[in-house]
Length: 118
Image (cartoon, rainbow, N blue to C red):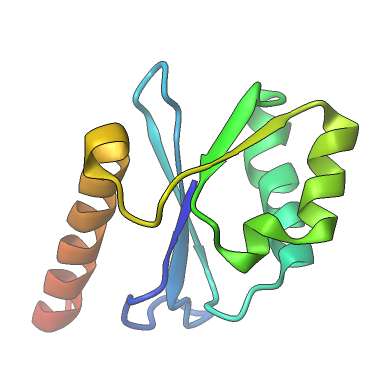
């Protein structure tokens, strides 16, 4: 799970970032448009409403050490849910190459879409 924050604003709500989740078993990416200034509480609600309510509880979540993912609220939420929080380095292509490549593709696509006004 990771945030992509270098996106040009788009949509009727001017979303400027995206929360990316990659199912490690099916290799299915899920992109959720959001705002760059989302808080840890916003992130927790986002995860609950958009991911967990559709797929069920995760066994573990791997993310970088973004403050939203290391906050006390986030840690306590996952302790209560019984989900393991695993942290990686911010960019580790050897271990999380698929996720990093998916994020790179997302950034390239949105840049081109905005450049051509599609």
